[in-house]
Image: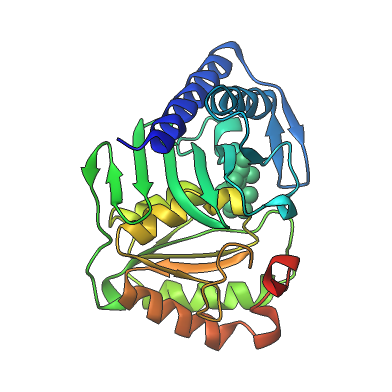
Length: 273
Ligand code: IPD
Ligand code: CA
Ligand code: CA
């Protein structure tokens, strides 16, 4: 038994309980940005998750969406939390939102848990040991032909600077792929790649808390995840492309063709380390 994973699961379960409690009693919604919402459930859920982690590991660092700045990721053991990923879905009573909890050390993921609340699907991973959905081992799909591929994507909330080339890419992919979806919870979308529902996924304007658990789940399920230059800088580059290796290669090629080079990369402080 991995005690980090057990604590991550316990904390995430406490998060799910808090979300359900708020859903029953009604939520207050505030607007962080035009597309970006936060509810009192997000804040309370984050607190509930942190409380469980602190009970077990009082010395560990916390990096949580609603309370910590992203550039604070240290080398020491750090719990990265997105209390509700898919708040817009949650606020509108639309399914597909989840709790995401991961533990990183030396800026690499060690364990990750994503629980989709409405279907009660629990995705877990331990670095070097595998990935599971409700306790059953999962693998990415083996599909090789992009004409048969089913792919997820996301639409940006705040940074609309890439909208033109991004829509051109979307138009092209609508014609090239079997299907394309925008479910609205990046962590869950990535888990859908990990268990083979999606053959690939790409998005930009993501943050470390969206990916911290789910990227490990994808890697442990045999998937590939990179930035838009095909480099291993997915964690802080805000732009990601992932999938089984064939779909990843295809999506990366399309991104290379449709997104101008200077817009494919975000240089953050983390990159210069
Ligand atoms: C959002 C979701 C969404 C993605 C946004 C994220 P939030 O997270 O993951 O799918 O497109 O970029 O910010 O705000 O619901 O935690
Ligand atoms: Ca999120
Ligand atoms: Ca969130």
